Length: 75
Length: 374
Image 1: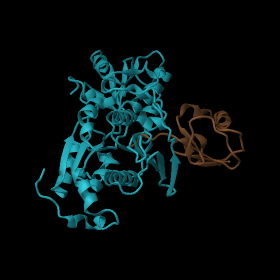
Image 2: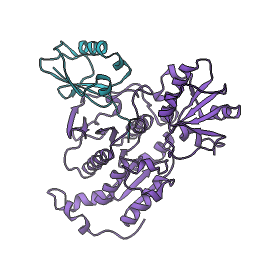
Image 3: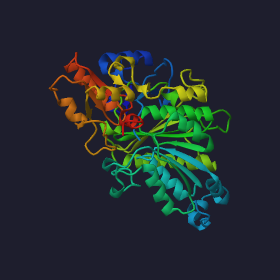
Image 4: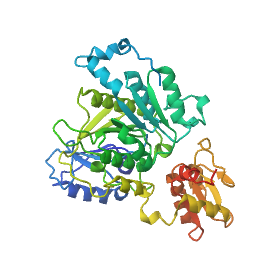
């Protein structure tokens, strides 16, 4: 699966796009990402699966595109 | 205000668009749009809405023009440095568009301003540069039932969305708290002052906000309802995310104008573990009277200047590198809004756990609102 990373989260994950082994659902993915990138815990961001924002655990079909979008404050 | 009306000739290129015509142009002329924040986003929003023939523009901004604004805030020139942005912007737009009606509010935007002004406008545009203001504006637009054209930028990326608009299918579009229910913890998201921003980016995002306003006012096109559009200027890519359409109530937001006025948006970004370093503006003046050293960690050319007692200036980047702070006096840090100063205060507290260290909540903006600070 592909993970797209936006805003200052790219500093945490050190990339704006990464491939990740397939996982069952978004809660599992979140857990794996937090283990791999502990600093992610300090950031707020919304999660989208195939360009649809999710608000609860969501099943990930093979090849899903997950986006992590933080809020921006600038104007 | 000027009685002279522009000829339709001025707007011919947009009026000949299929479906536009005199009807849409008249809707723009009758419209009232409030732009909160006349900075990187606000400048292009104001310029394009004025040029398109919107009849009445409200311009709210409590800041003065800084040299560091000029690379992206293209309404202002070097000669305007130190002048209030709202008044400079209004004067420049009035000179260019004599028929335009303008209301300049050259004050720091507060919940009281939301209550006093928002209801008199058809659409509100978010040109603010601070999470507290973004949440306040969102909550106020929800309370007053006004559409909010949201925009935000950071480094090379920007976001646009149309919040809380009446949908043709009934109900209202999602709003900011449906995306991010609560503000992020202080220090976890850098502002443009801290992280930088490429100058053209707010020009592009602000132009897109102006376009969304035009669509809302005329009924043409498809506004960004229930969608968050992210633009990446570094790669020239757009990424749209659909927001849940079954948006319910968000519990933790003010439910009345009375609650809005009481809501603490200054602390919205400050989690409790940092509150021991956070000092409000009134307490800060007491600290200074008792001999605290006041250190302004903004860039050297940032305005307005502080004259409360003796102020040392040491930009954040240098302050974070400094490992020795001489003497035993209390150290009180200040920046524009209180975010950079909190970073420095935390660093200094790590170096000197027993020393009295503080960061002024709300920054220079809050200090200058104090009666004795000037």
